[in-house]
Every structure is written in structure tokens, then in C-alpha cells.
Image (tube, rainbow, N blue to C red; front, top):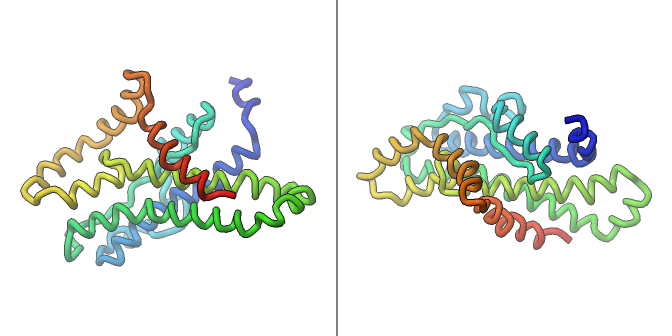
Length: 227
């Protein structure tokens, strides 16, 4: 165990945490903000529109899972406590559910694009400033790319149509209304299904389809965005 910790790159660890925390916080806040704009006060009344990370921490998804991925040298991603909302407040519950579901991934996309924009803006002076300032070196060559990549991973991961991920809200939008009660009953078993697909399935088939998907989507988009 001591050898594992000795091999951890401290700048990488710091930049990962500084990237991951705002990514998941703003992801969840935007779910709540979208619901609030659609007339649902649930998230606001429970203090979930706050940018305070402690309001959104999930012990496993925010701490344990990212730490395990970091120790294994994999991409750092995870999740926060889902923001509560009540679609009965929406004028059109199905449309509102879709908007709320997509608001989180949209926030991650905006953050990734902002990081890429900063990188391009600083590109002409990046070499000279990096040679003169070590902090700038880590900011430009480590933090900005990592911040964008983590946000893209979170966006595309959450767009998977697997309950309880955000992409599953598409089902509620396109399913005929008569099937919605059955769909919502299935959602009660969302977490076991999620862990089965994301963790057990790759182990059983010896292929990681989620990893392949993330590389094909988040990884390739990241390469296009950055100078």
C-alpha cells in the first residue's frame, strides 16, 4: 500500500480534485436550477442550489469511487447526491423531466468548452510563461486539459441511457404515456442495474464497453478541443 501512495503524482492529484469537485457540484446545481426555473422549489428549499460542495457529497460516488479510479490510474469520475425534484410542479412533466436531466451534462460541456477557450487564448504565450512560472506550467499543461477531460467524461457518462443516469430521462420523454408507470417502477431498481452494467458486465465479458464509449466520445472530443 505504501508503494501505491508513493507512486501518486501529487500535482495530478491536486488538479484532479480541483477539476472533479466543481464539475460534479455544478452538474447537480444545474439540475436543481433547471427544475427551479420550471416551477419546482424542491431543490431550493433543501439548499441544493448551493455551490458548497458539502451539500452535494455522496460518500461512495464523490469520495470512494474517484479515489479508487485515481489509485488504479484510470480516468477520474464519479457522482454527487442526486438533486431532488418533483415533476408534478412542471407544466409538462415529461418535457420538464428531460430538461432537468440534460441540464447537468450541459453544464459539464460548457465547463469543458470554457477550459478549451482559455487554453487557446493562452496558447501563443504558453511556452514562455511556462518556462518562467512553474504554477502556470501546471495550470496550462495539467489543470486545463484535466478539467476539460473530467467534465467531458462526466457529461458522456451521465448521458448513458441507464437509470439512474441523466440519459435515462430520454426514455420518459419518448415512451408512450401508458408505459410510464412501468418505467418508473423499473427505476426503483436503478442502482443494482447500474452497478451490474458498469462494473460487473466488463468483468464478465472481459471488455469494458463503458471505457470504449468514453474514449470514443469524451476522449476524441477532448483531442479536438485542445491546441
